[in-house]
Length: 420
Image (cartoon, rainbow, N blue to C red; front, top):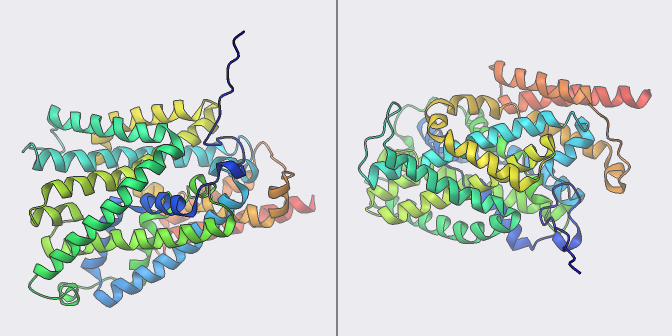
């Protein structure tokens, strides 16, 4: 008589991560550090170097890192203590159907960044390795094949869930950190002046507050997905500490990579620094692995979000998201980066509502008695109005503005509902 073994969901898509599913502190650190190895953060580092001297650069990193750390650290704590994904947390704060909004927002954004990441790898390699002429109007077939190859590899690691993410992180994090840092040091030592002197050149017209805003904005949207990964940590405080340390170190490293490449070779990432040093293959490895560690996390998050909306297995939705991101990669790269930056402002209101809902109802979350409504309209209104303010208000830091509006609306809603 045949008996089929029950399918084991090692990613706990719709359930709490149990004690058996929790990962070691080192594994969590590798996953979270790899998550922050994001090429768009190098672009932010380039802008910081153009607008700030070295002292201002460091102050912006510290201030922005502290705010980003408080935000992601809180989400890291919540994810680890509750053992729930962002989407399952959204069930409790936005309602079962209301959770479709944050799930759709983060899935759409992360698929977009996944596609952009593929092109960020394929286009430079096509130019340098194959000597192809790539423009917004023309991409040779060989370039599309590189996109396809990268898309298949990165989708595969996300398909295998937390196990795939772990393997990639253990390989990529040490290599990117060591090779990238070595190249950065070589660029500085071979330059005609010190790092501080290089930073002092040019028009320095950015304030530290504006610089901190760039630091926050570079990763606040991705950081909103923190519970999807921190839920595998041993406990809440470990989840918070690992998240804060890894995010601060990883982001700072990316900003330095971008800044050094800008002021020494005029590029916007460490790939161009390494090319300038004659290290093509090392540059290719660093570029590919750097993008891979973020892209598989982004696709994993998209799969969880789409699974929540459509009720289809996470692995299937990872494949769907990977196909969409791969097919649209080149178009996304040339046409959608600006829109993705707009969307970055829409996710912090989601995160602050998850945080407030959890800490205002912590006992109910932990004992499983938190009511799951169909839709929490105050949470929906908070996200919508917070996103509008974040994108339209030209004063302050956009993500903070959006979170403030969302927080006020949500708290008012909670107080009203408790009195009913």
